[in-house]
Amino acid sequence: MPKTLYDKLWDEHHITTYNSGESLLYIDRQYLHEVTSPQAFEGLTKKGLLPWRLNANIATPDHNVPTERGSDFSMESIEDEISKIQVVELDKNCNKFGIKQFDITSLNQGIVHVIGPELGYTLPGMTIVCGDSHTSTHGAFGCLAMGIGTSEVEHVLATQSLKVSKLKNMQVVFNGTSSKGVTSKDIVLYLIGQIGTAGGNGHAIEFSGSYIENISMEARMTICNMAIEGGAKVGLVAPDKTTIDYVRKHSELSSEILDLAEQHWVSLKSDLNASFDKKIEIDVSKIRPQVTWGTSPEMVIDFDAIIPNPDSSSQDNKKNIELAKNYMGIEADQKLTDLKFDRVFIGSCTNSRIEDLREAANAVDGKKISINIIEAIVVPGSGLVKQQAESEGLDKIFKDAGFIWRDPGCSMCLGMNPDQLKPRERCASTSNRNFEGRQGNLGRTHLMSPVMAALTAINGTVSNPS
Image 1: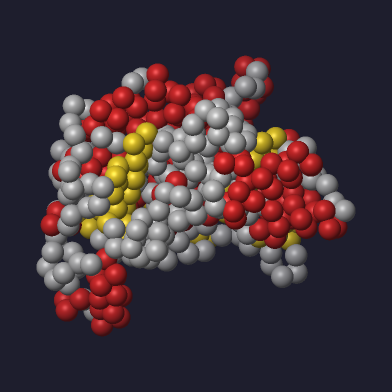
Image 2: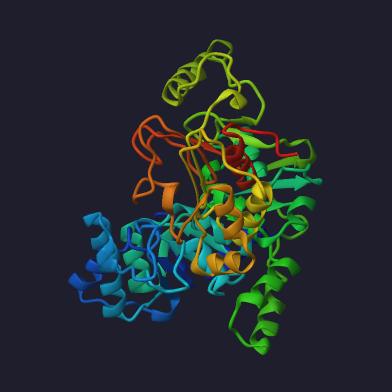
């Protein structure tokens, strides 16, 4: 019987099925950070348990860490007491249980979904979990990767397995060549606008088509990262030469082992006649740069379009549009290009890799940020990304333009660290969520690509990138 990629990964890791219909899956890799791990480690201690397989776990602090650190920074320098406790506890627990951690002073520290692939810990065919919803990022490597809760983090630490229900299969086929100025962030935002934030509920989405085949691993990671915003638990791309070349560059495994692994990795693709429960085909050549206008990723339109009018919407959607426009401070019949911005954030697990920073730097090279922009920050996704960017002179381009160059961390993606919006400030953000208060109390977030965010910083408004 023909199988999808998801079915193959499921079958390879399936241990048993319970009477409830749930199954137990073997987990190859768990990533840990400071927010969802303390209670999990506490649970192990209370039960007298040890991690089942130490080298399957990799940890780093990312959510709560300040991104203005300096060379003499230490954990004790963290001003917010709760943040400090969580970072310190991660350090203590990793030392206590013997788990490999890239701590706040390490060059390899960074956002967990950035360091995993770049350090070679994410490999095709793995099952990967983390106490973070955007674990779907690793699906770009042909991994069954998903976010889990704190109690599940403890369960995986103790048993190297996870109790889950099997998902349905959904295929999204992106064909064609994107227009100038249109990036993978625009492509995935457009998809979410089409299917809504519930469109992928209960499904694993496999992304395929000529567009996917011809983009980089960084671009694939951006798309899989935001599969969760379309309702899916899992996002997937079948491994190919692009994947294997990336893994060979970043992995510390021997050539002999990689040669053997590759023989299996090339089989990790959906069979020709595999059946999907849902299928969507999209011509990417028709997609224009996308920017969100409201308080959900599905509230997204072309960058120069008129923001939806509640009066011309269905009754079911009218109230949501009214609430979103009121929160976002948007008046009737305004366009995104009419809005004035206060801050710009380039970073997050969605768009903080070297390719993202190169694109943004190219857009601002030789220019200056608008006098109306209070602050524009660039936050590399890891110490290695920061180092690479600096070796290429990207930091100088940003700083010359008026941007602030930061240290690695989740930063302004979410309001759990010092990088937050003040009430009613409007932000151009390369992150993944624009919920109310996501970037700070009463903050107004507009999701967009690194190129669009960079140009917004220069012009003070949403601008045409082509």
